[in-house]
Length: 356
Image (cartoon, rainbow, N blue to C red; front, side):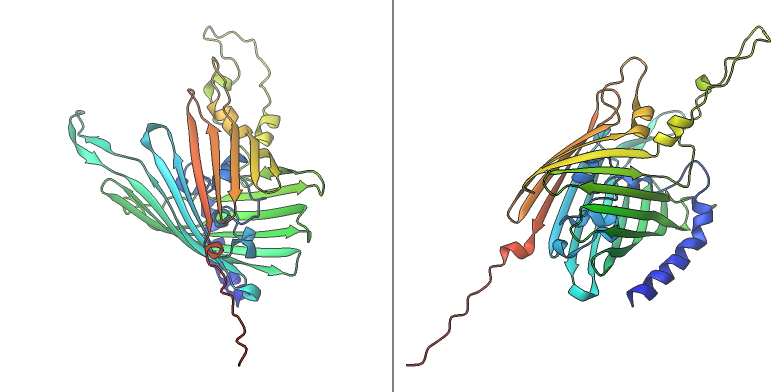
């Protein structure tokens, strides 16, 4: 049953993939925001983490597993300028039928004044975007799992509204002890039902990702290597200043054009490392080269491109804080609270009644 459902969604998705992978802009960009503080600490684009947090479903549906059973995850991100984003997720395991979950992701841009063509303030608006999603994962033995999400997307910007639908598909391979994990995932395959103005439908932020992570039996460290946007080779901003030097006085001297092959390759790469103390305290660190190159400044490079995370798990509750450096000494902060609702239910003891 699950495989049939997966095939139908694949057929639906591939009808849109050709449109989705071209062009330099797209709508529903908020779906690329990391749904978990732990993933933010590991570089935002991460499909190589599998644990009890159901918010991982949005990044990699194949990561859903029985340890997420009856877990609730609540995440909140604060961006500069009063923009905030959040994610709510819940997962339930049905044993041999797989693990399934649902959630809501949103972004609110705050109160923004509206003006006429002369710059006179005419009122205000509160634009926002929402994704309602659901899906699940099915494991084939102890080595292989596949997962799928379906998402209904809405975007409201002033008097304009757009509605669309997208699919996330992923597959993971891991050893029985999960020391090594390899994942390939395609996110946001789909399209719009209607655009903002009723005209041409805009593209989705389709993202083909692949990742490998590995740990050690005796060492509490795990290394993560993730690749993103694999269908779009050149992620560089076309900066005129990077072009070959031009001479205003028509000098015929030519200069060799600088090669950016190495930079283009590493813009797809995110490297992270996570340390844990008895799976109670987690410390994350990552480097995202694309973020570094986009956010750095010639006069002040700072920590742009680097991200950090810290988490604590105590019985049925865990909390994780992720920090991602932004330009101009700004920082995006994200907090995720995970609650195991099954942990609050005490098993009743049935005492045997001995007849007199």
